[in-house]
Amino acid sequence: QVQLVQSGAEVKKPGASVKVSCKASGYTFTSYGISWVRQAPGQGLEWMGWISAYNGNTNYAQKLQGRVTMTTDTSTSTAYMELRSLRSDDTAVYYCARCMTTDAFDIWGQGTMVTVSS
Amino acid sequence: QSALTQPASVSGSPGQSITISCTGTSSDVGGYNYVSWYQQHPGKAPKLMIYDVSNRPSGVSNRFSGSKSGNTASLTISGLQAEDEADYYCSSYTSSSTLHVVFGGGTKLTVL
Image (cartoon, rainbow over all chains, first blue to last red; front, top):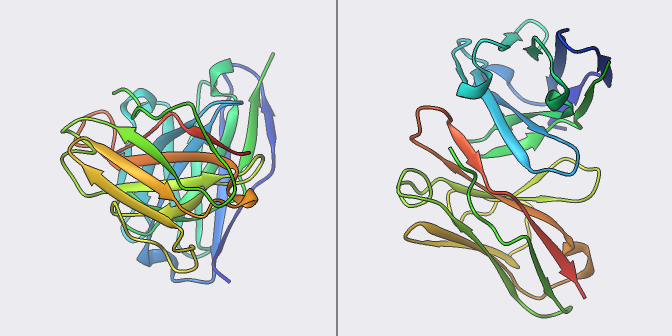
């Protein structure tokens, strides 16, 4: 079946980096983009950015520009999101999601909890 | 870029209908027919319920419907069921230079 499976929970210190993976299966990986969305504890959803799995083009939320990098490995149908210079307010569940259209996300990963704490 | 505006909570009894609003601007909701709605149960990933204002993905109950008027989009759930109790988020494409997609703050639906 179509699914996205993400890597496990991470605990990082302020200033460190984290790289979350998202492995796709059940569909042609390069036919859809992948967006990353995060959700701080008890808060709403926040769009972080998008990457085309076809050609690697990216579009990042301006507030994260310079700290976030999204990549894909088409040989393993895996998308990656790296966030650098972590702060306590980066503590959140990070989701990858398949872009059914430019702005609608029809398949979601199970989420990866990233905790930033000294 | 501010989040789209949703009511914090709505409630209804089983069998009733409820509507959740989502207000934006002409740069997002009002300017494009690219509004989506997501259902999220506690501890779970969001689930797409409506896309492009009023389209349902395969497998989503026809009790869920979407519409838009001006800068406000709406999600209507008819024949409320206990399992509909969840958080609901709207989202929209935006022409903002700082974002591509903006979400609403979320609405907690309680089935009484």
